[in-house]
Length: 230
Image (tube, rainbow, N blue to C red):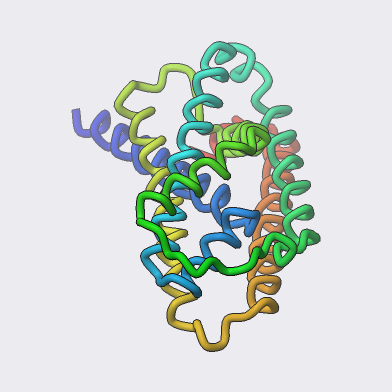
């Protein structure tokens, strides 16, 4: 029926938006891999920086799948405690934003290598660096809860669509940041890296505060909690 088709399209669009947002938020903070990506863009060229982002994205997707697989076993618990989980997820996102804002990514800068290496080598090293930080799982848990990304009764096609959206969000971020850095190469310095990280941290903090307020407001008005996300 037409209504069923519209509901299906709405659900898929909702999943796409949530997945895309998660992919961008996970990739944006300038940790060691982010700084490495910018360094390689400045010293080796834009596409060396982009394949570095690709390696980081693949690792992030692996951790996203691992997080989603683990959370799939507690769907009933998630459904019954969605208010507390989304509130906790928003708080975790707020803490992460504050940490990002206060961190100094410049400390991660290493002496530039004179050897460009192959695209594959740059890809693999970025993948390994990101994979070596399993704490990213906690960020995914917070984001999945915050956006109600995993819900009971989700079809396999919708689940796959969600993870593809996470990958697309990450790739769009890396494509965009390498493009900007390459274009502003003459003006992009250590202070530029620090400032960019401050901006990213501020955006995450604002999103987290909005999340906390929306969850509390929804509860106060006694509305269905998932209504705000669907």
